[in-house]
Structures are given as structure tokens and as C-alpha cells.
Image (cartoon, rainbow, N blue to C red; front, side, top):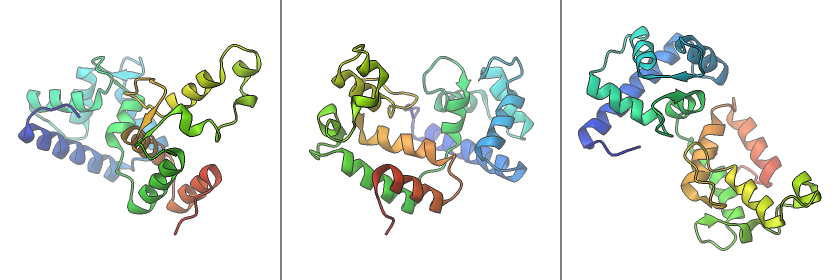
Length: 202
């Protein structure tokens, strides 16, 4: 989140928590529910919420922040800083932190990928893990093995990713925090991590 000043940062967190709690009371914050809510807020149908739509959306749920607070909250949601809130940004803004069980699994997966322990996953870390031979661009000679591996890593960059062919620990955690919203139970999340990374939940 951008730096607005300690007081305003705290106010943004309060407003967002109030928004999340209101949405939960009105029907939950699951992926399907949030999709319907977002579409209801998107008055002009352009798949984004502009400032006025965002303001009206909050008002609909009984939240009436000051102009300064609203601008700060909008900035919190608007990760790519285009002046609008996309559906992906909307989900990201409302996501809950990973609980301890899920966080432990995600941390283990990162350790598996980060073979050299540098805190950043790079091509050299995954070249013996990820098999590029099934990639169509590689088969057709359009991309080299390194380019395919970089594309794979860029998939973990998230909304504010820089597509630099590597994944930081924060990018990894953000990716799985976003993904976690669409996973209904801890048991299913653990099964997914086991199938993908071979990790057993302790």
C-alpha cells in the first residue's frame, strides 16, 4: 500500500475492514458473491469501478468516508494506478491474510522453489523442476527454454508484477493470498498444495 501517513493508513484499514464486514453480513465475500457485487457496482458496464462508482458502492453499503479517506481507499484498491478498480483489484483489496495452516504450506512451497535460498525464485532455481518440453512455443522454436521458464515465473507476479522473470517472496505470498480466496476449505487448499508441490500438511 502506498504511504499516506500513519493516521491515514490506519483509517484506510478501518474503512476497508468496515466494508468487508458489511459485505460478509450481506451475503459473504466468496468469489461468486463478490463477482455479483462488483457487477452491481459497475454502473457503466466497463468492468472497472471509477471514483464515482466506488463512492456510490460504499454509500450503498452505508459507508460515507470523507473525500480524503475515499481517495486513500481508492488508491489502496487501484494497484496499477490507472484511476479505476478492476475486478482483480477489487478481490485483492478484500482478501483476508492467509491463515497459519495455509501460510505454512505456501512457505514450504517457496522453499522448494527457492533452491539456492536467496529469497528470490529465478530461472536457475526451476530449470530442473519445470519441464518445458510440453510447451507449444518451445516445441515450435518460438521461445527458448529460458524464455518459457521466465514466462512461468511471471505468472506469479500478480497485479503489480514487473514481469522480470523472477519471483520475490512477497510476490509469491500475494499470489497465493489471491488464490486462497477461491479455495473453500483448508482441507482443499492442503490437497491442492500436495498435488502441485508434494507438500503434506503437518
